Each structure stands twice: as structure tokens, then as C-alpha cells.
Image (cartoon, rainbow, N blue to C red):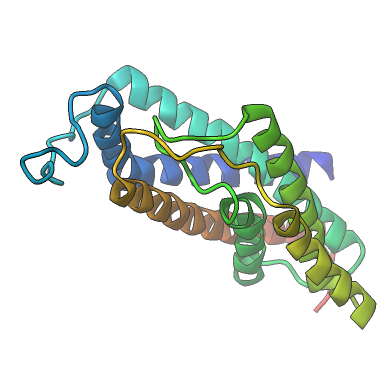
Length: 234
């Protein structure tokens, strides 16, 4: 079983990581490079001449930086895939439903909500130079939000009574009722329009990649189960 989990996770995770890297290079990195011009002082937001052009020449390819980004993306999504496929294995063992490419999409959406969307409600993706609260506090809140949201998704999907579903709603809401750590003052050189574009693109790429990861992991897991002669629940 362990070898099947590893095989499915490594293939699905690395493929999703490559997709994430490509999408980030095309859609996210230009916004990031644009923001770095403000962080370094090369551009100044709200100048006296009526503003700075939103169109900046930030296209380019840095082999070292971009190559490391591709590698890091692959490692991160292999890690996500290991968790996702391991939970799929538990679901298969307990007969909690059929797992294939189609249902894998739902697993991918749940992963996106758990790891990216729910934390982003309190701590949206940040550009360089923006104001932020203490890093350790943000990490603790992020970890708690991921744990609570993951448990909530599990209860919502596999719960069999109203008690489980009510608990899921409480877990979804709890981190946000507590509230994410926020900076004492808002400051920074980056235009808010650029920050909004960055957050939107980062989350959009995340959703696309998680859907792809879930579908591929589901398809690979179904193949592993079929080759092993292990029946799945309908």
C-alpha cells in the first residue's frame, strides 16, 4: 500500500508542480516583478505627475531564479500529493466512496479550500513590501486554519448526521471568528490595485493546479487499485 501511495503521489505531485510553475511564470511572476520595482524605490506610487503607468516591462527569464521556482513548486506539490493520496487510501480502506479522476476533482477543490482559500480570507497572498503582522503569529494562525478547515471538509464530505455537519460549520468559521493577526498600521510602497491583482491571480492559479492535482491523483489511485485487484465502493 505504501508503494502505491508513493507512486501515485510523486507522479501526480510533480506533474501538478510543473503546471503550477508554468502558470506562475506566466500569470503571477509579472505582477511580483512589477511590485519589486516599488519595493526597491525604482517606482513610486501616486506621484505628483498623476500616477505611474500600470504597464511596465517586467517580462524576462532568470534561469537560476525561475529554475529554482520550478524545483520548489514540484517539491511542494509532491508534499501536498502525499497527504492527498494518503487520505484517499484511508477513504478507500473504509469504503467512503469511489475515487477516480472525476471524484478527484472534488478532492482537489477541498485541498484548495483547506490550504489556500480559507487561509486567504484572513491572510491574503502578499506582495513584497506590504505591511504584515508578526511572522510567527501568522504561521500559527495559518496552521490552525488549515487543520480546522481540513477537518471540516472531512466531516462535511463523510459525516452521516447533523452533528457532524454542524461541527464542520463551526470548524470552518472558528479561525475567522478568532481572526488572523493583522499589522498595527497599513503602510508600504505597493499600489493596492497591484496587491489585489496578485492575490486574485495567485488564488486562481492555486485553484487550477489543485483541481489538476486531484483529478490526476484520483486517476492514478484508481489505476493502482485496479491493478492490485482491490474493489472500490460504488
